[in-house]
Image (cartoon, rainbow, N blue to C red; front, side):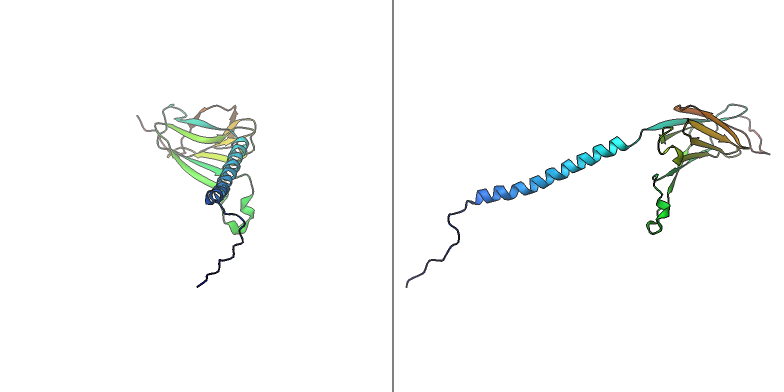
Length: 177
């Protein structure tokens, strides 16, 4: 019996190794494009990101200058300078609150923006020790500000160590140490 040879569209035989090399180049190219894009985005993010400081707050009694240990620091900061509260369907709160515990009359708070930066007005730190009046710390364009009760405010140049003197609430008494 006579078998007919099948018709082939190929004019010459194809080497499979050449096809495999061509296929393997495409994923490598995609990986390199993704790596390049990620590195450009990272460089852009780090260049746009503003410098922030770490500030140590020393909390003392106004009269005795003894450390105030029974205090808590509440840091209120905005997530972003963009008005995200105006977009109702996102349901994202614009302010973040973090709590810091005072140890031996001191507390270190990281990420305080430098004065005159774009986000300097988006942070407030409230100190509320038991039996003392609350104090509010703010970052202004010119420097730092500590807002004491009865509208007394003290402004000063930026520093990495801030001493805050607390006055007793009305009717509270000092305990002997």
